[in-house]
Amino acid sequence: MIPDDHRKQLDRHSFLVLKHFMTPAFLTEVRSQLDSVFAAEGENAGAEFRQEQHTKRLANLVDKGDVFQRIVAMPEILAYIAAVIPGRFKLSSLNARAPNPHSDWVQPLHCDTGALPDETGNTVCNVIWMLDDFTAENGATRLVPGSHKWGKLPQQAMEDPMAPHPDEILLLAPAGSVAIVNAHAWHGGTANRSGGPRRCLHAFYTRWDKPQQQFQDGMLSEQTKASLSPELRQLLAIGDEQNAAISLADPLRSGFLK
Image 1 (cartoon, rainbow, N blue to C red):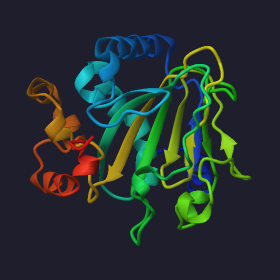
Image 2: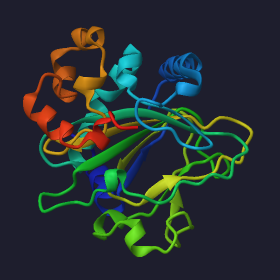
Image 3: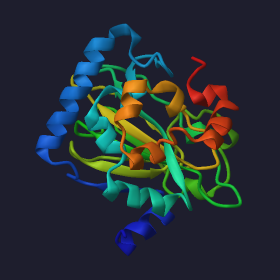
Image 4: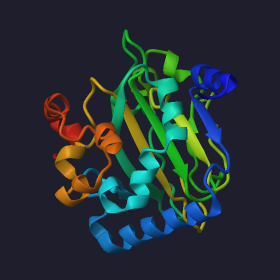
């Protein structure tokens, strides 16, 4: 169960920030493992799924460290996902994103996977694990509160989704905080004009009847899959033939097309 005021905040405004959710020790562990993966992958970082100009990205992180498996299955966070997505859900992807320092690159406002709620309700939810302070200068996520209820994508309503929206806000919080975001809301990364890093993880979840952004059963190594608990296998839909049929019918979101 989550507090009723948190549930109302998510329903009305599409987001909730849990400040200082991560312990200092856990934050240090996650940062260390993330930096190790960035260093190991170099120019290929993020290539399994998507690379982005002026930005460092990683994909398929469940395959790249036990700490990432703990993140996607944390019960306290899954309770918030359940407040956004009705019924059964699964992990769609776990990525990292870090806009380069001294950059002017701004993401266009978007809804994740270009999805709108359907007759059953919400289908997507994103959890932003803030590994550095999110400030107005270093590329904090911008978001338009309440836009998850508008029934339109930004590109359908704005001449330029990269332009500021009059109602947008910035998700500002100290390192170690976690933001729960209804990913139907209009949102995007801003420019990191600072000289330091702005690292975060995006743990993206989707309703069970929708394709995974990265088809976990096809992307994880056999060694990783053998190490997963039954609960984590279920959350990632490992070995589920119905999920494979759903995800592989959409190859762009399954991660096999670059």
